[in-house]
Every structure is written in C-alpha cells, then in structure tokens.
Length: 284
Image 1 (cartoon, rainbow, N blue to C red):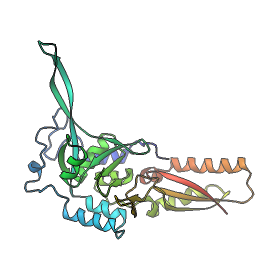
Image 2 (cartoon, one colour; image 1 turned 60 degrees about the horizontal axis):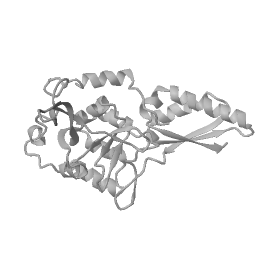
Image 3 (tube, one colour; image 1 turned 45 degrees about the horizontal axis):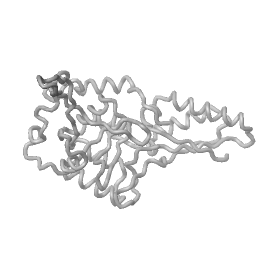
C-alpha cells in the first residue's frame, strides 16, 4: 500500500508556519525566477561544495552497516543540500526569418519517478555528484529542512539522496515530512506508536490471534558494489505479520483480512507514520 497521501491538517499547518511560501528572508517565492542567484556560494560563502563532514561520517558508517537509517536522516537535518533545477522555456516568438526564438525561461526543480511511480526529489550532498548526474542542471544550495519543505510543496513523496552515486539513500514519506517539520524520525518498524496502533487494529477482531511487525522487504538498499545496507530503500517499509484463528474458511479469512486493512487505512497514526506496508499471514 504505497498510494500518495494527503498531508494531515496539522502537518500542513506546520509546513505553513515554517515559511513554505517565502524564503528565509521573508521574500515570497511566487513570481520569482529560481535561476537568479542560485550559486551555492551566495548562501554558503566559503563552502567547497563537498559533502558536509557530519553527513559524510554518517554515510560512511551507514555503508559499513554501523548506523541505522534514522542516523543518516538525523545527520542530514541542519545540513546543506543541493537540489537540481533546469531551465524550461516559458515563452517563444518567431523571428523575422521564421525561426523560433526563446524569449523567457523558468527554472524548476527536477523530479524523478520511484520504482512504484511516486514522485521523488533528487538531492545531493556534494556539487560534483549533481553535475555528474545531470550536467545541465544547476545546483541550488539550501538547508535540508528548506529542501524538504520544497519537496513536499512540489508534491514529492520521497527524497533521493545522491542518486547515481556509490551510495544512494531514500528518505521515504514519513522521514521527509519529519525533516520538513524539524522533528526527529523513527522508522515505522521500530516505532512503539505504530506497534500500538497495529495491536489496536488487531484487537478489534476476535478472529485475529496475533499481529507483529518487521522491516519491510524494501527497507534495505544496495551500494554500488552490491552490498546490502540496513535501510535507505524506497519500500515497502513495514512488514505486518497477521495471525488468524485456525479453522477459518476462505470467505471468512478474506473478510477478516479486508476488515483489518480497512482499519489500518483509517488509523491516523498509521497514515502519518507508515510510508508503505506489506501484509503476510501466519498460522495462529
């Protein structure tokens, strides 16, 4: 279950209060040419364009399976990131010779598609990784929370860190929202609130004997050498193991599972804290 979700009202309010309609100086984004002044040296004088030390250390430890994925997200918080923008022609005219001439161009954030079709914002910790990924893209430097706010505002469900590099890391929707709100993030498969919500959804049906949760099969990722890493994947994020009472026929089993899934979809904690999930049945 990985369909796009609307932002809950309280998250929309926090995004608005964080200044999503204006930059850090209070200037509205509306009507602005994002191509003006996008050199990272303007906002970060003295920045050499390399991965910030704190982020580089976290990625190195993650690559050695010494740091869980929430540690990488915590390191990204407060750090500088580069987002790619491209020029798009917005107005053309014909010259006296009958040729098409570009008159105006808008700058827009680049989005990519995740394996499940969801919209994702690519970001980079170092400028050379961005230019290697797309030579025509211009790097826009911003603090990670501002970048996450822009990603959410632009309808992205995921943020992909350093695509095409030796280590690519995906922030799934709850991690992206937490980064945008300036909050700590804990993956759903290790979240006590998610576990309590699952137990409540299961307890509503006497035909359900047990429920458990594990990391989903899509949580792990691979580096360029093919080594498995403990996170950073696009999902499914949460694995749910549902135990049912013995002796149910097919119709009763299907009805029980469908009702459980309906309760999951209606639960506010699950909706906010779980990006995507997979359900497996096990014997009672």
